[in-house]
Image 1: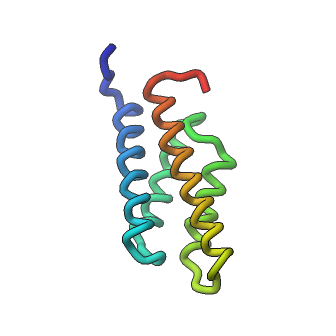
Image 2: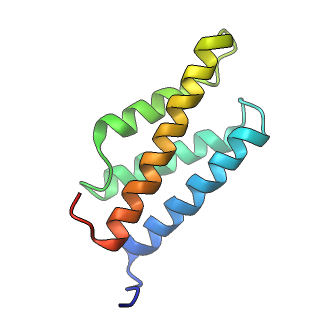
Length: 106
């Protein structure tokens, strides 16, 4: 078994690396960090460029969580709920990218 270095595989690895970096940034940086929005722009571009790579409801939900966390009006339970939902989205992206790289059927 070997790794085929194609554009899709290399961008999928980049998405996985950026996702791990964003998980780290979510715990270490402020909620208003601009790099997180740049990550969501990259994810949206990856999703649009490679049809079938990520599921539409997951991407839209992750984008909504990322935008909601930029607002200051949330706090307490609502803020923690949105953060948990965003971590679930990050987990989905990692799982789906791994499945794409290993050619799993789901």
